Image 1 (cartoon, helix red, strand yellow):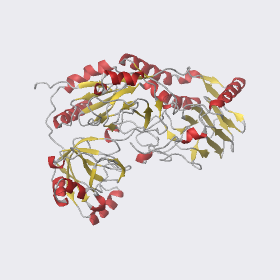
Image 2: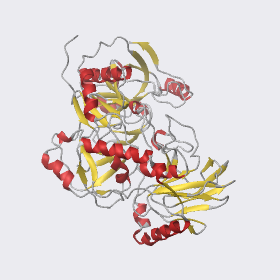
Image 3: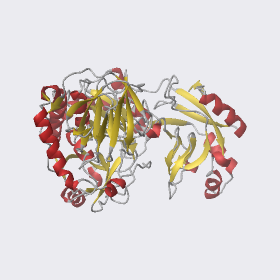
Image 4: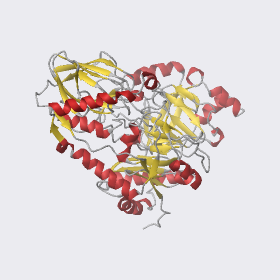
Length: 243
Length: 345
């Protein structure tokens, strides 16, 4: 058996959940361990766990204290959590169409100015990236992506917007994102995708899973309108390929 | 089938049940009743499952009319004056509305949320096992939004079962109990003490997403930005301005502010029913005590049917009258009007 890794911290989140924290910062190795623990618990469930929520650096484990106590659960979680994550053998990759700039990406020009380059260059760097869904949260389908090109790292807006459109493709800090529903956001809006990562009455309801790979490709605004209509009708307009 | 028609209703009222579990990993908010014990008590009175869908009525008044037959309902939660055709209806009792009769509810006198359970429960299209309204995500059934006058529910015709009351244990008083963490180490001892030793009030700008707490500013050790991680009902996060927010049922599934403490399961409903402007305190308890209380709370809800009693007419009217006598400290319409339904995180 391979050498074990340092144990995560077990942080109490009230009487019915525990945060299994692998790192305090955004760290791809920590995220691998989060997803590996999540997968291990799905494969061999521990009695009493009701739901798990993977995030960048920790796994939130909801449980029923009527079935298992905090200490007993910790004793079961730790031996699994210190195992090195198995190498990722198979991942899905989503190729996600994006209409960059203009009305769909109102911050593209400002981002280009702030980084002393052209909007086309920003699009090339953003679309050229190789991303991973690190977590999904905040609102349904909001996919937080790791893998943003270092040259695009910039702090969030001073004044968050109270409402940003459904399908917004944005960057904030070291993260990139695919936003599904209209929501408040302090990130920089580069474009919009017709892809719905969450759509009720579609199979699957949720398109992306933590661990999926993502790449973007640029489409013109006319294509956006066409794909948007198709997506509204329930079509999955992202292309799925093997990673 | 009968119908129950919403004759009038205030804001912050919606269909709520036990919530939508199992998809927080996709960012799907749990939602559900703010006060689970009152939800369960109202449902138990009319023979429903404890976490069946009810009308969660916000701090304003409301009225409901039976059509096309009789409808049996029950109310529990924030106390209010209630009557059917001038006859008082006590909290924590069932009542059958004859065809055409209207149940009228006044403002909440203390607390915010009252649950109207309907015999046979509200019917609709379940999404992830729940009818709970989550307006932001467009979820909830039969109306995926707050209720308004004219809305109606198709419901079972009243069974004719004898009316019941439910004897709930005396309300727990004293501080709202919390377990410290998950990020209490983002605060020094002085600021943790400030949180635990201060008097707090719930801001009028609170809603089902979160209760903003008014009191001293709590300072962070390392700034207010942490990498987003998961939240639970009752997470108390401290944003940059130092004013804590207790996350409630419509919370985002993840959040990027340090969470100093978490309200214990048994006290989330008590916090939900604390009126804006009322002073209260927190008290830290150990995990073992919190989990013991959580188990007792679950048992209390499971055993609610044992607390049902025949609705003795005389006792009921005395209770209703004594309820009416304390109307002197009712929240004013002005106070209740500051209760906002906001859409920011």
